[in-house]
Image (cartoon, rainbow, N blue to C red; front, side, top):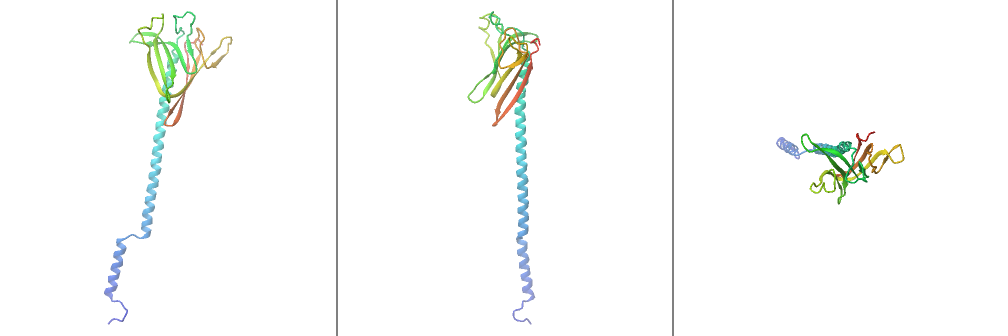
Length: 224
């Protein structure tokens, strides 16, 4: 016999089963917060990892650009070191310059290999040719002039050393006329004389950044 307002055991068991089924079907607030915290942690770690990956990739790219620019400097050092104490244009008796240079370019004579066991004297010119945005470092190689008609059927060979160059600056070490002390100057055109050394700075822009490479060449045929 049941009192009014009381619940039967069957009804109580049924209510408990319903409550249990509701708890099993959903998530509690604490569980949801834990999941959100885990997702936030994973997102943060992923963002940090991607940032470090982009930074590492940028550093690698910048090192490659700097290595490329340094290779250009090394090539120019080796080329300048081979300058010979010979007149650039021997057909002009009044001008016996062995080496002519200014802040943006140099001209000199050196030996170039033209076969397996053959070499020939060549006049070389290295200079920066300006472009619309960046310039191009050009090396021109021509047969050494003996007479004015020597080069009529031998056009100079033009080679691109590097492009995307913002600027280049040459400086020359040697004793100027009337002085016995060597000093650095922005030009060189003394007759029958090579500078003791040449130094230069190359600047280039890549990916919105500016890169610089410096070079130093001691001319071993200068006599100093």
